[in-house]
Image (tube, rainbow, N blue to C red):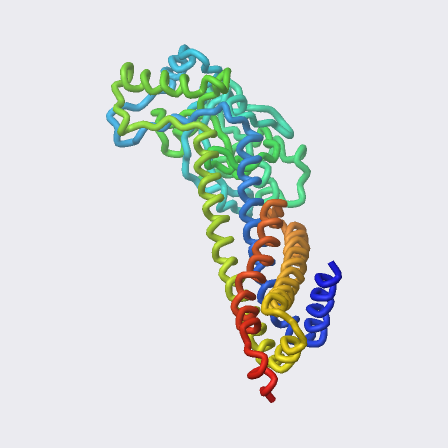
Length: 393
């Protein structure tokens, strides 16, 4: 025990006596560890953010898309046929319509116009912050009314309270549409940014050059556990009743989209972590170089210690401990800086999630670097012949 303490004291003494060299040696490791924690943390944070956004809208939603090249399209009157399928609670057709959205001199280039029916709000689990929802009367009368997403209130109605927006008009391709409601801030779902949507009655889309045919529907199921069975039933209905082959339609769920997005973001996080890990290898090479220099500088010291009875193992352990301490110190500082910088980035809107797993892995990696890259210099020092070492100037 006393011998071990003596080795650690000697190692710390040698590190402290060369402060600048030790600091520069640790710098590569500090940057490497910090980069790994930051990049993986940002990637993990993005994954968590996407997952929570999708889950907040519910996972019991299916999207039916029929290829426009198919000979078959649905008409508005056929929507009720889908409700007869077991486990389907509600169905909402929708159309993406193009048009220029403006309010006076203000124009929103990011607004998406969605034509749908009142059931859409229920299917997508949306909420209204002010005003009212679409009604069947709006559908029947092809009323020029709309609901607007929360983000559009800042773009089209600067410095206007949400409740005061209801009743005002906006222009879509030159036609006036009355704002009947403002949606609660929601986020993205099924690849659609709801907060940038302008929702109009499905039948009103004809004023914007659209027909009444349907190629896309959202379906809400009653029991999420039976979503796979429901998907099969919908596919059977499309193929048998509407004669649409599988090449011309797709039925997807939020779960499948969530799995795909999670796979993509996880792969991205691993890629970023791999890129950042390259700097750890560079840092390890730096440690090895510095330790080799240290061996050269201390050749005479090694010769004296061997002459006084020090064994090869003692010299080997001495240099390994020095390398290990350098890397552990560098790793610790890198971890702290990585968490600190990540926390600061959160205040600027970045999604950062520092998992304990990646912190532990980073710390272990820095320790392993100290051992692996310290072995060669330590071995070189241990095998020095004491007579040759003492002759060194």
